[in-house]
Image 1: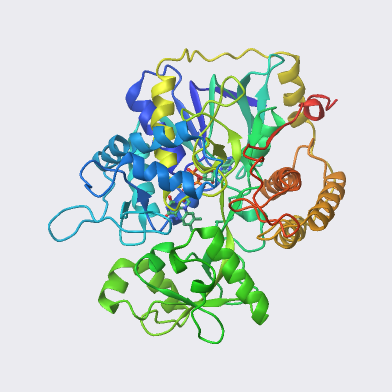
Image 2: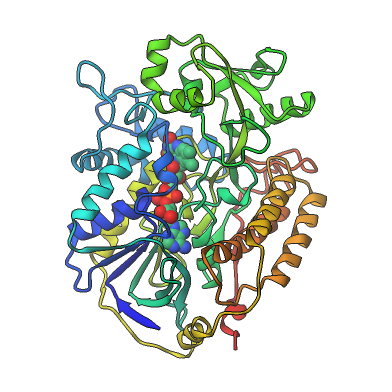
Length: 540
Ligand SMILES: Cc1cc2nc3c(=O)[nH]c(=O)nc-3n(C[C@H](O)[C@H](O)[C@H](O)COP(=O)(O)OP(=O)(O)OC[C@H]3O[C@@H](n4cnc5c(N)ncnc54)[C@H](O)[C@@H]3O)c2cc1C
């Protein structure tokens, strides 16, 4: 196998990966440069599709303060946020958002030239910055991609997927195995700092707002390398994704900000229903709105409810939500006239690889930032627009942390690393799997048994099915293509979600159990899972 060496390798080109590459390049001399790898094209990511905005706790916003933002975040997190992480990220917001603007990200301004702040569910003040109306993710990723492509310290490798981490017998990460989708070749990359910025796991579910690449790869890689994985039972289901038909599975998001501007939810009879569920009605926390919609859909045996935005001034509506109104128009819905059919969809992964705000994980040399990481910011439920903030703050802090680290590339191969390399040097197996079908089967299983409302029986049935699926598709193999690797990773992550969901015998935040409806005041702790790496390292 071919090999190369870089001072830092970043896996993923969403907001977290792109921004960390730029900050690293600006902050320090890297003798072997930075490699940024991404499994599709540069910038294709969850980040690209983010709509509503990013939290900006800015000094210039006199209505807001770090303490108010911290309180809102802690409340949404339902007792499981780590206060220190929340405070740190909130405090860093002003500096990092200003740095983003200096890097060419344009947040929307009013006619006086001042930044416009919008409101989203469970925020006590207007503090959400947006770009291009409802195209915040594009505004951020486009600006960052432009700078990354100009930066001579950063080598970009597209259509390349990290498929294994090289962990030595001391449990340190020394690099990764890449699979190049265009050539079908595997290659080795050695590094002393491997950064996972691989995003979330929405594609594990039948209905999701996440693009195709959100298959939980980073969590599989870190878990199988022996890292601690935290809080995987907490998956956020967004209440309002465009639900045109039961067959429409990758669902376009109808941002919370539409409800923030006054839109109302209606059931099939045309009646508003949120007041029966929460006093904040449409602006109640996401998990509550999701379960309210789910319950209305179950009552009426329908696959959607409706979001009525027609009371918002149409000029304002089209100006503020150009992407949403265009997408709806393409599907025959004029949002200033007609209610939008909406239903919940898997949206955000609160748990992930346990990491500090600088991205340090339980494995030396392995870092995790952005949605793939679990820093303690979100707890049991993410506050809207905190995720993009976490991506950029943690990317910024990681670069700062690594600027003090010794990044001389160590191409030292021990027995453990040799075993891993040998596995990927073997000829391909002859097995032929219908991966598309297998993925669909897993997604249906997760939606039905480990989705919005869970129970012991359903989770145990899911665990049993996942174990059977794992038995016929072993992880320790060199796969034929990207789809097979993704399916392999999805199986690992599905197992982790179900295991964590089974062990949390209460309902809290986004985790709702029909057999344990109450929150257990004694269960204020994170769920942590760690593999002993035997499976991987006993491959031969
Ligand atoms: C439709 C939508 C709207 C949203 N709106 C908002 C919002 O308004 N505000 C907000 O704060 N948050 C929002 N979110 C959430 C937010 O966008 C994400 O949490 C955040 O962008 C995650 O960024 P990231 O860099 O961690 O990961 P991503 O942006 O998902 O990037 C992951 C990258 O890793 C790559 N990758 C994955 N696996 C591999 C592998 N094995 N090898 C190589 N590359 C790999 C992917 O191709 C991708 O480039 C939204 C999410 C969605 C889906």
